[in-house]
Length: 108
Image (cartoon, rainbow, N blue to C red; front, side):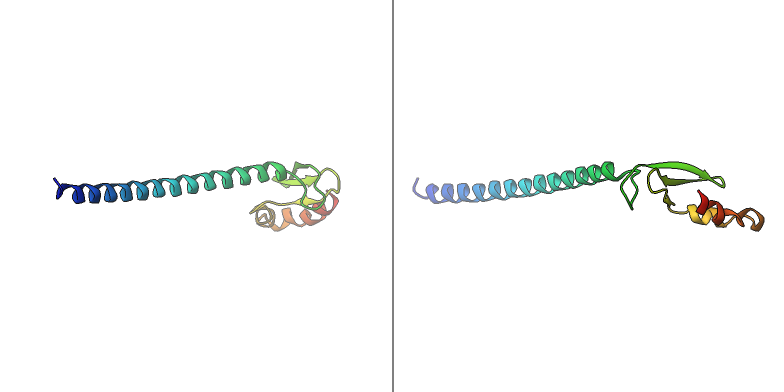
């Protein structure tokens, strides 16, 4: 029976070590998931705070049509802001169509 005691102690020690390692991995995984979730929530919160706000003065932006392209214009400072590809869309028009685009953009 005394030969069984060291084997039993060894089994308990090995089992405890495995359980601690498993718990440590699970805890690290939960912390990583929590951090990702918090980062996603922070990005969404920042997006909601800045969505359709003027980057210059912070007032609301309104969408306006300019030569068939939807652009954003500030309701306060009247700045005009273009999203990705909108400037290209304006300048890819035929020469006769785009001659007045800059003039219209400045008068907007």
